[in-house]
Amino acid sequence: MASSIEDFLEEYSRTLHAPLALVLCISGACGHLITIAILSRMLNPTNAFLISMSCSQLALCVNFLYSTLFKFASEELCQPFFFSYYMAKSMHLSVTLSALVNISAVFHVVGLSLIRYKSLSALANINSTQQWFSYQKFRLIVITIYVSVAIFAPFIYFTSEVELLPEKIECAIKYPELRGQPVYELRFSPNPILQSLTIWLFHLCAKIIPAIILCLMTILILKKLKQIQELSARFATVEREKAYQLTTNFILIIMFIFIIVELPQGLIGILSTVFDVAEFFYHLG
Image (tube, rainbow, N blue to C red):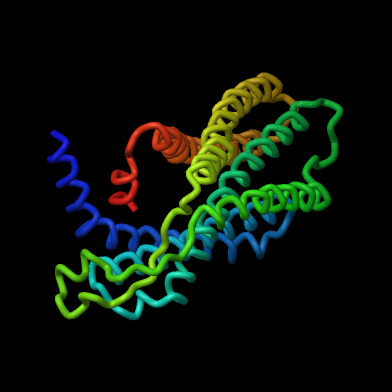
């Protein structure tokens, strides 16, 4: 059974991961570029926040595309150009940036859920006549998100380091002319405490806890929607109520997607500090 899983993961890593990542990253990047372009023409505090969220997702797509192509070129094609110190260092920065923009994207979705709930609460308030979410609140929330993300940067950066190896064994086997050629590779820091601390900090604060918050906010938003429907006389037209329902449903879909993507990753990441699942992570990219 274990052998079958290893064979599947090896085949997936070799044949499917790179083209799949290529398609997803390019289509995702194009989608976010279109989103940014459209929302920029209808600028308001909410759309400005969505633009900021799309920028994080766009950076994540572009960065993951680079790391996937780097992995394919260095490990499958064994191109010596990717064995240099500066290329390995670029991968070090790429790994750090990937984690940071991933955290930023997750925090944006959590922020979006909180903004939507507060907006629905203001809408349900009979005495409410002004829009709750202003540019001042937008700047405050975005600054808070990026300052929070910056706190993770030192932990993630120093968890990995560039190391000089006498040769790349896998490439030396496939290409005998590469035997004895020194290579620079990105490796985990030899400090196991730093490794475990970063893994727990990243997966708890950037995946598990945000996913739990999103689950709770989903319940609260659905309750608030029900309350608004009971006060539907507040709306001047049926179309306005449908528009709010449609927008909220769209946000709920975004929240649900993040929950099903981030929560399993967080749980597996935490388990990796107890069980040996590093090979599983490696082959899945």
